[in-house]
Image 1 (cartoon, chains in turn orange, purple):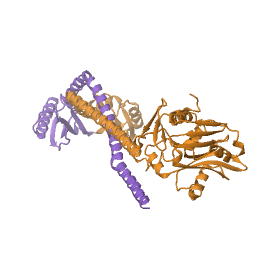
Image 2 (cartoon, rainbow over the protein chains, first blue to last red):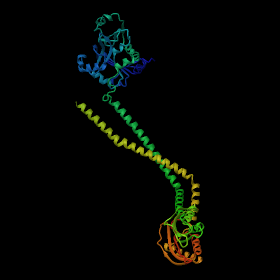
Image 3 (spheres, each protein chain N blue to C red):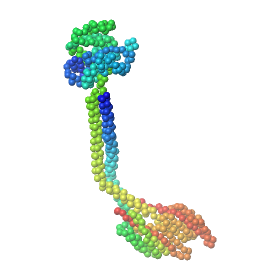
Length: 381
Length: 181
């Protein structure tokens, strides 16, 4: 399979011919006449000459969008009947102008065809231009009740005429195509079956850029494809609901499962939790009880310490202990020696005179008043 | 023209319906989903914590036994099993009388001070006495080595040049534990 025919082969899977009668051209090249209702999900529809008007025109611009706008302004100056549906194929440039083939499709048949949502709608004469692409040819196609004459130029331009058998003369048609067409080969297709059998291969080999010319313009129309839009929206809604519902159910299930597990563990742990609570309670109370004992400054060691520290001939007349603050008042040989001795003692902090030291001239002793703090080191752990 | 208006109305209604669905279905759903995910995360943490906790039962038992022993040891220094706080004060006074008698201290006056505290109740008694230093030391030693925790606070000792006796004022505090054992 060549890259060129990749899309064409896809579109050629299900081909319908829509002419006087409707036919399906199957993959095995068998042809079956079908009812209009049976044209469904068509890959490609080859449109019979009777349903379109074919012409070629030159325009000063090559942009297809601009061309469509120009035709939409006054379609009746291009087509014998009013229609919004037309197919444009760019042929080439001639003397500064751009030559286009135009096919105007009847509205009635187009609305019918849209129901089958075809991917491409290609006029039968346009399709024939790809049979001898680049070479050009005259085609005379005999069908049951009519003859179709098609001129396909070397540049790809197509002109055609159809009529009852014997009504049109091929020589006249050839002459009307001009001097350059006189040497083109003439191909006769005698039977409809032979003609329809060409479609499969032709569509499969149409280059992608040419296939775009014949892409169904109404394929993505929202209102014309309401059915598909509805199907799409409903599918989307179902997917969203399924996703939401499934994730919701899963989350809810997981949550409930975990709650039950948590509850079960909690009930199993209630005894242990009570023990832990009890431990915390005992610890808290123990801290309070021990703290009360630990902060207490024992007085006996304090008195013993003072007894040891006091220098010779030191007399304390007044001792006051409140908490761990001690205040002493008395006489000593030298107040500063007492203060120095106290300051050096372990556990005593902030020792200092709280009133001036006075000397008694009679005894030669100094009166002092000292305050300090005492911290004991022994604690209950 | 009519078709165009009807199309516009339909499109408008579709947009409104979409917004209503988003407001009252999609957003609440995502909010619920977020909450559910948060709750699941918390529950998972809680379960992991509880499983770890369940595996630490022997350690908790050991901790409980240790702290209970320590608590009982500390609580033994406190008065307990009492019906009334005043009964502790009375018991304290009796203990002080015994101690002062054995120490040979002459207690001149006692005064009950108002107890305070809730779990640990402090029960103080103010004492005034006259004694010599040796007996005072003996008295203090007996108080501080009592089988219950008794503390001495606001101790004031005065001596005069002409007398061997010390004038002493102090507060003896007993403590009671009022709580679950």
